[in-house]
Length: 160
Image (cartoon, rainbow, N blue to C red; front, side, top):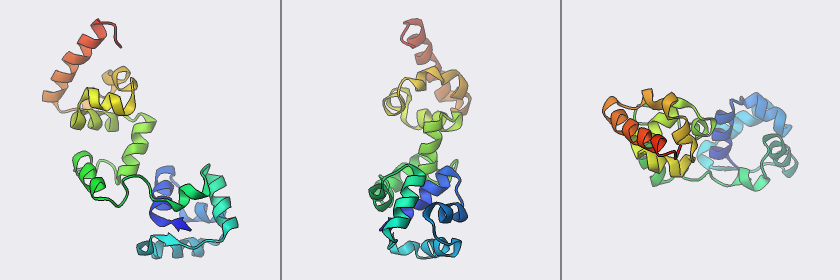
C-alpha cells in the first residue's frame, strides 16, 4: 500500500515529477498519474517490487511510504498551517518543514516570528541563534527589536 498524501508531499518537497516517480517505481507515467487521480482514496495498492523500488530510490522504507506523514490530514495540521502559512509563504506545511531543515532564512524568520526565539530553538536547535543575523530581516520590525535585544544578551553572555 502507498499513502498518496505522503508520496505527493515527498515528491513536492524533493521537486520530483510524476515521470520521476514512475522511473523510480518502475511503472508507467500514466500509472503514476492514476495514483494522483485517486487521491481521495488515500491508499493505493502497488506491487511490492514497485513499492520497494520507489522506497529504495527515495531512501525510505516501504512502511514509511504506507504511513501518513505526521500532522498530515489532522485538525492540528490546519491549526499549525494557519499559524505559520497564513499568507501561503510555502504551499504546504511539509514544504515549510523542508525549508526549515534546509535552513532557509524566510522559514526560520517565520518560525521565530510565530513561536518566539526560544521555542524555535527547541524545535530547530542552536542554529536558530547562530543564523539570527541572516534571517532577522524576515521578522516584523516590532518583534525583531525584542528578539535582537535577547539575541544580543545571549551573545554578550557567550551563549551563542
